[in-house]
Length: 333
Ligand code: SF4
Image 1 (cartoon, rainbow, N blue to C red):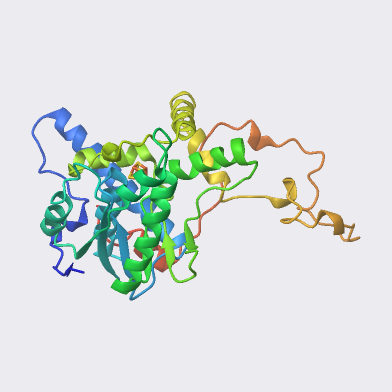
Image 2 (cartoon, helix red, strand yellow):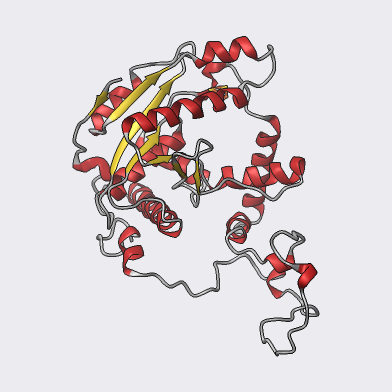
């Protein structure tokens, strides 16, 4: 195993933009990128805070596949590391699965240029998957399982205390719909979980981030993206269709996706049908008035309200403020 340790240069913040340009459209583009940068860093800081993803002294292993999402995750975490209220380390890990044509030098070159400690694990899972999965069938499920096992082992060997994955808001919503449509379950992707071997904490700091923002950020930062099609496998067709559906909704009804996403952090078990979540069978009148207790005959006004931001007041403590960069200058705003 080769773990290369190097120090990160200041440019790691990822929220710097080019020098002001003289013409108006350049200035507008610059302004938009600055806004995007602030939003990305703020949303990741918020998710880290909300789910207590990173603690002081953590060694966060960022799984870098070479796709836009994991590049953006690493980039944003490097930026936040410089101003986080707690010290933590980052190590990037890539699993070289020996897919034909995989450009093995691209990631090491990039990581060296960013001064990020990294480890490349080489395991020929490609041949194993090819051997076991019949031609024409999707290989992703077995491939992911093999990859997961290897990454957990590597995390242990590197002494990583957290494993960070690059799944984003739209992965979460896509999974919710897949599970509803085909599994009869309301189940998305946990922002934080314990690995099935019980030994690792897995985190998804991009849980609040829209995929379109990651695409724009990847474009702006010019990440050397490695195409995911090298293995020749197709993305799950149903997942592709659901993604299209969500994108169409987002274009036709701006705000709908944000509201839907917010709904999953704002669940009312007594108004759903799950008897495990709410004890309907033991529900009895208490004899005591409860101003919040009975909505049986009320119209649900929020069902007709236009899609806007949450009306709930948000309380932010000083630690959250630090993660959100409120005292870290204008770049995180
Ligand atoms: S696209 Fe290829 S590399 Fe990615 S999970 Fe599927 S089989 Fe594995």
